[in-house]
Length: 490
Image 1 (cartoon, rainbow, N blue to C red):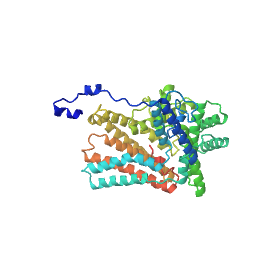
Image 2 (cartoon, helix red, strand yellow; image 1 turned 120 degrees about the vertical axis):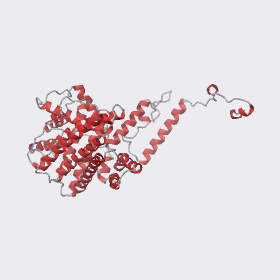
Image 3 (cartoon, rainbow, N blue to C red; image 1 turned 180 degrees about the vertical axis):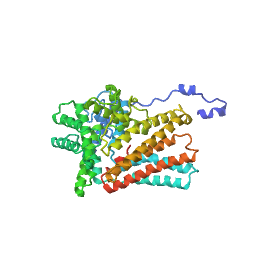
Image 4 (cartoon, one colour; image 1 turned 60 degrees about the horizontal axis):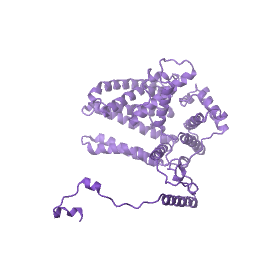
């Protein structure tokens, strides 16, 4: 009699223990040899289909077939074990991680990747428009403008050259001629550093002397394989950066401009191919390496030699990247706090117009550091907004000092009217006002005090205006990669 009819005849329904004790009907077991045979047949069919359609071999981003993994069955059936291959959980996890990391570095579809990146911001703004009934008309207009601008960024087209280069894995090898030309171009830029038209492009994390050493390692092949691999990444990126700087002068011939852009994409894609990891994990690895070498233990403000100067610059910029990425991703930082101000680790000539950008970027690092601490403490409920209010007031005061410094430098700069200089300046202002908006949002009274709320909205509007200005200059100069401006990344 079925169990559901027991109650009608005076019986009691079975308990869970009875269910667990009930014997199940044994399922027919499939022999291991049958599984192996079926798997081999499927793989053989797949290989025949690939040969017939002429599809190229899968890239690193796609999951490798089972025949290519260890402990799995060969497609030819020559080396078949007596037991079926087990699927390793760690292997599956690593494949998924590698795929997502590579997608971040070398996206095959720029529009799709931009939609993925911009979707969160769009959803947040739409939620604010829908749920916040206290918004005024001009505030709603700002949010609606932001949504329209996000849609415009997401629907940017991809040119044929960019699509072709991004979709291909390029070789990371250098010819001797390429290496010599890269070194000579870097040394020539170092000689011409007193010229105003070249000063705008001399701000770099890799000095010419270090680039020469890396190029010599690649030419002679004297270093270890791991060192040569890292040198390829840096030299390829340096070559792409040099080609990008050459486009700031806007070559008149459109054909030459397209060739320069294609070469730039090839070098950058070669660097990304060699990296094969996402930027935040690379920052974490670099931070751990610096800590392991003890380079973060800096007690003096003056370097003793050129090598120590390079080490201090590496520590400063790694510290900057670590704090910025940690703030954007809301994760704990990798580098421990420094014992000296991070801005004191890098020095630039006061006659270089680009010095202000490096100086302000490093001056904002302590602001980002406190922002991250307060945000993480608020998420863990270790600190209330009332307790954090004194620190927020101190951050506002420091931001006012930084903005005053920016205004003085820009007013006295002789190259302030240069389009390239304006491009860098809008990028710096975008970073400043984005940070200022985050500072205002941490205030305990921003939701209740009308004046504080207006200051927060003003900072957000200024950041959006900087984005529009950068996009306008991008259309004029027509040298940004994949319709995406590197000046929007902070």
